[in-house]
Image 1 (tube, rainbow, N blue to C red):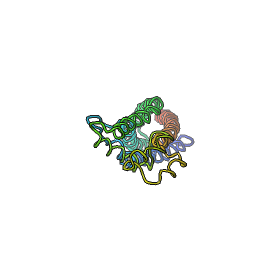
Image 2 (cartoon, rainbow, N blue to C red):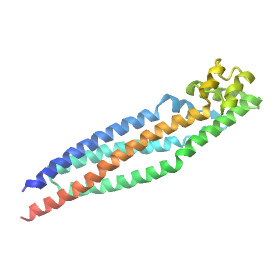
Image 3 (cartoon, rainbow, N blue to C red):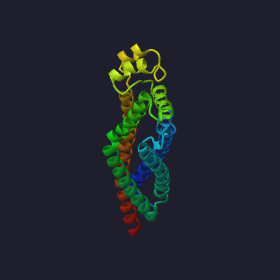
Image 4 (tube, rainbow, N blue to C red):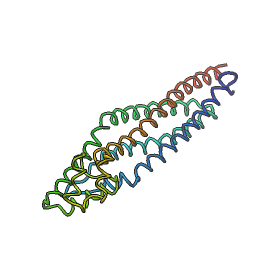
Length: 236
């Protein structure tokens, strides 16, 4: 016996929310893949200075986002099918998956909040080390020069602060772009550019996480109400 009245409205409302959830999973998966293959982050985070690899902690968050998007698409399909079939078993499985996914998202959000400043800090330290080696002509200066030039060309910046940005072209005009005066007035130092690069992408991930969390809370409430409605209708 199918559900009737208000419970039937909840059934279709849950189906609509699950379809939106499925679409959101696809969008998040697409955004995560775009962030993973973005040319700016890829150029920087694949650099290697001697035996030292560029910090790639940022990719941990991206991989989590990819996994969340894929699981969301599966869970959204499961919820749609369970709502249409009015199956308590499927809806119960769907609710359990939502709780697990919500817990993982909260954990990922806490990880991102704790590491949001550390990610940019590690990349800036890596850049500073390469810049120092390139300017001082240390043993790995050839590799350091390539690393520094990649930072400068990718982020359109020069130096680690305003002073260094202004005078680096004087010391080594092969490391920075020629219009050093313009660089000085624009304050286009690489520390600032690195902060802008990662803060913008982490902000995008944060918005996606909040939107998904709100949808998941609504779905958990609707799935519990629908399960109760199906149980009551089967009794009568």
